[in-house]
Length: 246
Image 1 (cartoon, rainbow, N blue to C red):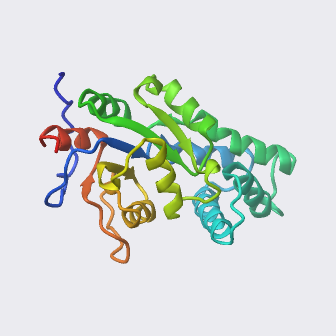
Image 2 (image 1 turned 90 degrees about the vertical axis):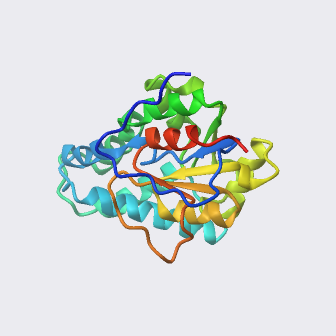
C-alpha cells in the first residue's frame, strides 16, 4: 500500500476514544466533496452581489429541511431555483430573471472537488474501505463531480435522498444508505461531512461520524459531537490507517 500523503499545515485530528475503522464511509457531497468557492462569481456574472451566495445556500437548506419536515420534500434543484427567483426579484440583473437563475444553478454541475479530496479518497480506498455518497442533491451532480475528478471508480454507489422523500438530517435518509450498503449495524458505517447538522443527524441514526473541519471552526455544542474531527480527507485516511480494523 502506498504511504498516505502528508498534510502539512492542518491542525491535528481529534479522535475520541474507541473510534474504529468503518466498513463503509458515507460521504456528504455539497461542500464536503465539492468546492463551492466559485459560486459567488456566478452571482456576480448576472449582476447580483456576491454575498447573496451564502444567504441563498443557507436558505436553500433551511427551506429543504422545512419541506421535508412538513412531509413534502422538494428536489434540491427545484428548491434552489425557486429560492433564487424569490431572492433575485427586484435585483437589477444584466439578463432576464430565468436566465440568471439558470446560470447560477448551472454552476453546481461545474464545481471541482476540494484540493484534499483526490488524495484522501485514493488513500481511503487503499485501506479497503467501501465508499458511497449520500446527498440532498441529485445523483447526477455527484456523478459529474467525481467523474471530472477521476474518482468515480472509487465509489461503490452514489445515493440521493430523492429515493427517500426526506432530506438529511432525517433518520430515514441515513437508514436508506445503510440498507443500500447491506450494513445491519449502523456503527460499522461512518458519515463524513462538513456540516454539523449532518453529523448530528447521522449520529442520531446510530452511525459513527467524522467532521471534516477544513477551516478550524468551532462545533456547536447543541449537536451530537463527532467521533472524529479532521481537517482533510488525507488526515482521515491517516487516522484509520493507524487503526487495526475491528
